Length: 134
Image 1 (cartoon, rainbow, N blue to C red):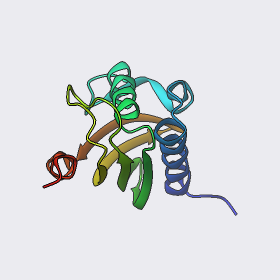
Image 2 (image 1 turned 90 degrees about the vertical axis):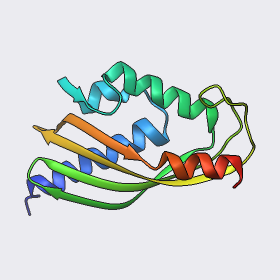
Image 3 (image 1 turned 90 degrees about the horizontal axis):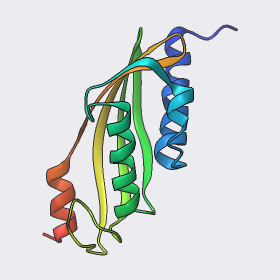
Image 4 (image 1 turned 180 degrees about the horizontal axis):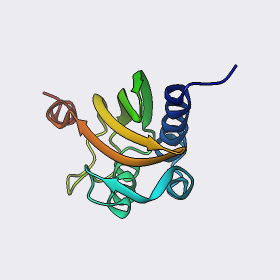
């Protein structure tokens, strides 16, 4: 049975999240992102890699879990949680040793098996509240 475009796009996005965010493989961008990729949350492909490096440094045990994923045509919408312990510097703040668990949303556009666009939102208010222990 042939897969739908949506099923293929969900597989592409899921594989990218696993490789890039959970296996900490910055070079996976070469496999998953198109040459004309547009990054609307972190300004550029390089910005995306820098942000991932910052998160990994601050939360070495971080884990991203896809809670819900919906596709329609080229668009894939993901709701996920990220959990981790703050054991490294985070945007100039010393480690708190506290655990965070926050929700994030990502919207990807996939064409010809490659991610061509990404925008994202993360609940920073909750994150900082958890890290400050309030």
